[in-house]
Image (cartoon, rainbow, N blue to C red; front, side):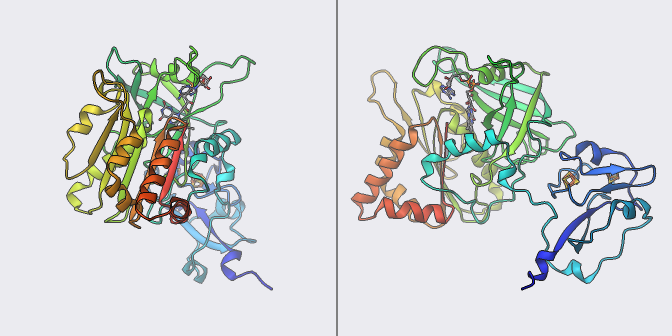
Length: 416
Ligand SMILES: Cc1cc2nc3c(=O)[nH]c(=O)nc-3n(C[C@H](O)[C@H](O)[C@H](O)COP(=O)(O)OP(=O)(O)OC[C@H]3O[C@@H](n4cnc5c(N)ncnc54)[C@H](O)[C@@H]3O)c2cc1C
Ligand code: SF4
Ligand code: SF4
């Protein structure tokens, strides 16, 4: 049987020769070398372009934003495109939804990123989906073989000088090169130098802490929340390669960045959607991004609740403690848990979740509420136990609820 006609049709990316000013911007930016030129025209390779759209915003004329649906087997060849004075007319094929000739898929991600991500999301208990109203994420625009160079425009210590953890707020600027990210996505940073085997350092992943329109609105920049690793997970003294490199960066330094990564840990965008955020330490990065996204859109009155459970040793160790406290109470319901405040009983994030059992149960059962957990590996165990207890005490079954949450893209875990 013949395949449905849509499958035989693909979207072909073209450049309008009438308005292109031959500035070369698109060819410089394309992360997969899909654009080339002769002395007459700039053209796009059908079998290489994956529709990532990185070239579209920087094109000064809009010539790059030209598309035609074609029979997949007979696209416009480079030779044809080189000879055009004008774009070919649209045809009836353009009336159908067609995929790009080259699919962008998660399995294109570098193996190390796939491996790190599968470990980081293991606590979910199954594969997650993106919320139905999440925006389309761009993935792996800049692979480790072709990283983008960012400039450090800020590096501020977030924790008190005498706090045991040294956490920094880092701002990276991408200049004129597009680096589109969504809240919840991560980027890779390649530390300079080589490892003990003499091989180039592997990338380390860091969650983006700013919303999609930039750390500073409408700037092509983003922020990270990075903890200097001075001891390993067992408490033995060590010097983490990437985290120390990042925390020591100075304004003006150049950094090799890969990504973006993450196709499911994304926030819902539909009005009325609520978000429950549970984090410790630098796990606050994606929560800051989502909260700031919602805060910047407050005047739209889109509704939906934000509830945050945030654990740290003490207020001094809690990134963004000051700014968080300034947020209006009717905008976000913040629940802190401090485990090392002198003279006070230890409270962990799961203890505060239990204290708010009614609210947590209501949100777990609200099909418009999406749940995000982020922080140090192991934190999810206590949180999931708290969910289980809350369900049990109220006649619900966590083991039944969790697969439902996953199937509806409502449960997202990232721990490292
Ligand atoms: C999806 C994802 C998002 C992440 N987001 C952030 C983020 O927003 N902020 C952030 O600071 N980190 C984040 N990380 C962790 C980050 O990628 C690095 O693992 C971390 O900075 C340590 O790298 P390093 O090169 O300094 O240490 P390495 O040189 O790689 O390791 C040194 C030693 O420390 C241990 N170690 C590694 N990480 C930690 C840790 N976090 N705590 C204690 N010991 C550790 C290692 O096992 C090793 O023994 C994220 C990780 C993932 C997978
Ligand atoms: S960026 Fe736009 S104007 Fe410049 S060469 Fe590419 S298509 Fe032409
Ligand atoms: S859409 Fe992406 S892959 Fe295609 S030409 Fe533009 S930058 Fe290159």
